[in-house]
Image 1 (cartoon, rainbow, N blue to C red):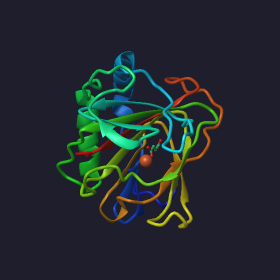
Image 2: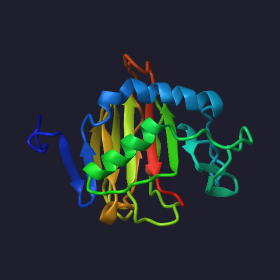
Image 3: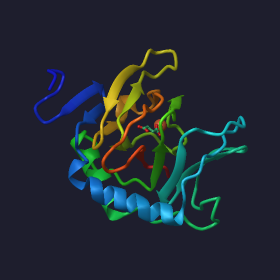
Image 4: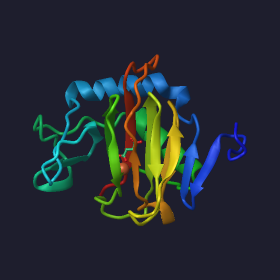
Length: 211
Ligand code: SIN
Ligand code: FE2
């Protein structure tokens, strides 16, 4: 383990942003089963940006509201526009893990209503962006990685700030809040690979207090 890491696998990326190495490993199978349950109700789909581009990441949501984009803009919606029904409930295992990871990172009392589930296949990328569609920024973002590894780009508060490259592995959790809440971040194109639990895919769970 590099000397950038404390013995518990915690790495501070910048003020308010922490990488918790392997924090989700103990519940990895339960998380993947729960993703399957959500997807059975609200399938993955590639949404369209307000500018008319189809996103390369396939997404779905669970929780009281879900993040969606279409030609009219970005928003949190209590309904899945594809099915017309409410989003699947947030599984308890998601809620608990998000709360505990936030607390480990110094943000107590995290109670997200929204969990965006991202599905990446080789070649899929997510360009640099801020998470700023939430009602307030007092709460952190908690981001869980499962399956194939990826390179996370973690920048600054200006788009022009050069992002650091953070390798994310199966089971890693990144939490960013406080002075880091609005940092630009993204994911480089996923490399080919095979993961024993997810095959040729990477899943990401992004928890936010949206309301
Ligand atoms: C996101 O920014 O919504 C996803 C980040 C990730 O996939 O790790
Ligand atoms: Fe994001």
